[in-house]
Length: 274
Ligand code: MLT
Image (tube, rainbow, N blue to C red; front, side):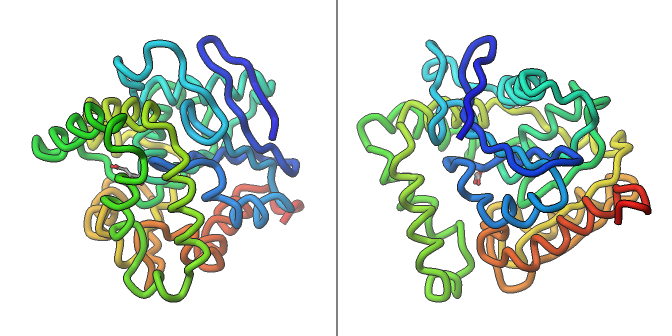
């Protein structure tokens, strides 16, 4: 992995391939490894960049992050700083999964000129209900005592479609391992940030770049009906449902997920490059 020193933290990231930059933003409490199949598929036709967000994977938190929380805007600013550090000035394809999607909305709001296209995966544009927000704060306050494994136990059953637990034991074990290795401080910081995130639905109608909205058929965290409303609100957005999978659609059916993703990237290239 490569390392970039930013204004308030250091990000570890994968950087492979050449051509149109595609930035992959992982979910909570995960890291860049959730994108292994997408990195392999994209590296032959694009420059794919997959960071560990601050606190996750190999990237550290900054002092004060745990108690203050890391806002979705702060994560988005880190991504813009990472692009600066890589001297990437051309517009990028931004791919955000779940919490990565919450971060994507903030990037769209602050850095619209840096965007060539969007891929919005298994995420939500609405803010949390009061109950969900309270649950996040409770976790932030107790995770040091509970330990990260508890998050795996709480979230695990919701991440994959029921049939994926039998069909894909390796992917399930990998995700569980990543969750268990995530520092409680990073979990607390992200939960505080997600609890405070604003409703971004008003932004959707303002999006002017090609957008793919993609969701697992059995996603119970960001249900297909809600994702369909997101797609309907974004002018010209394409909506793809990946059959027989849950929230972790990029890992549960990488072939179908990658087909939609690679097609979007290929369609952006000038005809001669296709
Ligand atoms: C994720 O996959 O990033 C989380 O489920 C997002 C969330 O907790 O809302």
